[in-house]
Length: 419
Image 1: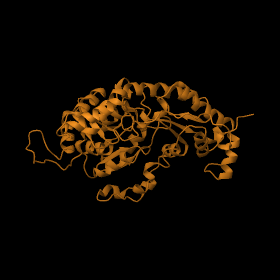
Image 2: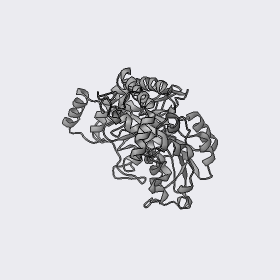
Image 3: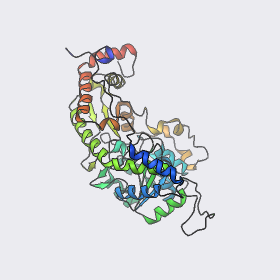
Image 4: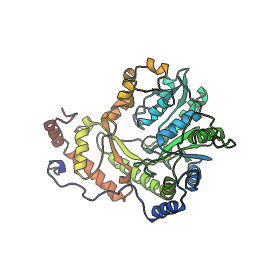
């Protein structure tokens, strides 16, 4: 007889909390106080951001790092620095956060959605090829959940078609592809330091590149259009003040000291968890590609085939939470189905080409299926010992063994997917 589910009145698998996020200590406190007492709180006066930019860029295999106020801005600046103009098309995945596509709109260009691979959850190179038109100027592959996209394929397509590749690495701090750091694989890359990210100061972002001209352009755009040899009130391009602040630079520098160790722990635990969960019927963890030499696991993500598992996804999510395993279902629908795109609510950014597009007719079946089947676990849950991973596995196993009872519960509660 199967053990009674906690959702149905049984004892939960786990009552201990998983590691909290963010992790901080005396080093962050000391760095913040040092910055406070220096009286140099802005990027133009202090050394905290400049030092962080150099360290972060070097860790990610790049000559240049330009710290900015957030990850969305870093994408937009990268697009502008690369010369993306009105009417240009930029290929993006439909399974990603809003910013990957909204940054394209704010560069007055047109996002074109290409489907993802059903196993890796990253851009499918064949779908990218099929989406290219004479207006295509760039590709933004997202290293989703922390697994590098197929960058060999992306860069090959880009060389053939003379396109710019901008990595969206918001999930992929310290990840690597064939032992090359993410952030150095395309022409430019964008990282985020928002509260949930693997490296965080609450907010912030950075652009990385090995291209001197792109770096110079990005620095100008993030600093009110100034240029190195210009006078102070001389502005060369449309831009603004997008500089990262010194308090954030101080925190990020100390957080950077922890990043590699934390990433190795996440990668080790994520691989272990994936190997265990893959033995259950209908459970398909994000497939770890051979080219991924370090997965940053911003998320541990899987697809749940409800029919094979025996219970609907939303009911499984509720049951996991009751067992002491925090989780979510992720995105409810593919990005091109957001009201923003269906209604073309682009504000002042209205390229004529985009007005001709009907995003409701954009078909991305793999992304749609992943939205229906995904389960996400936060990266903080991978920072503990193997025993924590075993608790997650035990919760899944317990739910799988009681799948029929859970399905009956889902029918009574009219949970979506219960038949």
